[in-house]
Length: 174
Image (tube, rainbow, N blue to C red; front, side, top):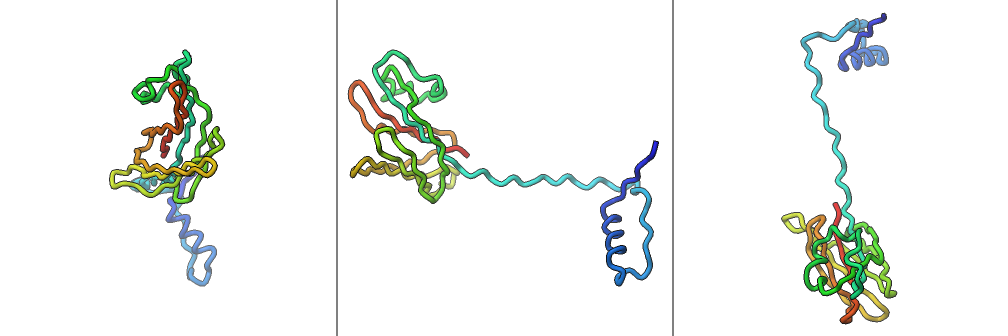
């Protein structure tokens, strides 16, 4: 069985320097055949992962007086079991969009023909996101601003009647 001899990086670099730059090398240097036993391994360098860009999930929900309860994909949101949403016996997911959250406006279409334009206006010292939302439907424009931590949902009711409501939810991710 052949035995491989590993060279320390410094020896390999020195060997390359000597062989590729003859003007600097007056005399060829021998390359050691094996690494010194007392040499400690180089500390592992942890690769820096770039921070994920924040995103915002836009949920459009329809709440009615039907008997279906809360849709399975919304079951993880306990806020929907509390007032004012608890007044409705059925809440379903109409649409979901994930947008980039930054200083450039991102738009989500709403099922009523309108849109929600989302813009980040910064972060609080505690790391919470400040978000501006402009709702447009025809010539009507309304705005809201909210502050939320990643994973913390924010809900607003866009239209309601005693038997039905259109709810828009926002969840910052990352």
